[in-house]
Image (tube, one colour):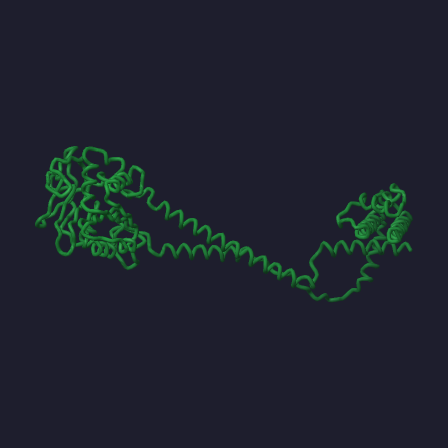
Length: 411
């Protein structure tokens, strides 16, 4: 009888070890399938998150593309040209802003249209020729601070001139549609010169002029090369006659197509005066995001379900339990054996009495006392009393626990 009690305690200990140890081989495939589904769901969530981030970045870039760009007609900062564009539009000359080569091709240009091109450094040889071809039917083409590279690619007989020290205020001194010879602007602009027949220089300082107008010829409209960007800037347009010159220069027709070129229109085989952002930057960013996703999946993987390993010798469960029970008896640890028996009884009674699996021994004792009509203190001492200190006390505890389970089943 004594050995049987020790074996029962050993069986309880083995059950606890098995429940807290590795999963059984039968449950491994199910766990593997759940783990695979979880991994797929995690990867899908990451993909959706990356797509939302990419969309938000694209929308944010599209909305803020004009912010901070010099002479942009929608930039309200000091370097922008929002004030001039707003005044021109308020005077009845409709201003249409285009920001790409494709948008320019879709804009209607006729003999009553003025085409204004700012950010000319973003034009390449190909996009510059495309721009000129589309503006051939316009009334006037205004190029703001073009580089020597751009003037050469467009075959315009205008060359930049080294800046010269001049007066603080410069008069137009020319007769040009929209300008008066007495119009005065601040000095210090980029200067250009032209020896072409019919060319009209204005705001001349030394060998160069802040504005040069070329008459229509060679299939292109009147071309105005404007070197003084301060005529369009928000922070300087109110100086002297700058506002009047800028507005009258742009309102010679019924509409204005304001072209702000983009570096993204430049192809890899094209040439430009500056180092533009490659057109492939979008696909490269997308590829980098995919590489990051693959890296996250690779580094976050698990090793998969556990597999069973064949043992060199198979030992029956009953033999293991009996051997463990003999070891417990030899060790004489009656207290640990008693706690194992009590834990097993509490778990069984909780299931029998409809209590949760994690119910405490005190709660199970109260429910068992109510079900059997026994003294609550006696039931509590049986399930949650002090651990036994001797082998005889362990046997008595095992008998009481067994009897309590019988009484609850009969109740």
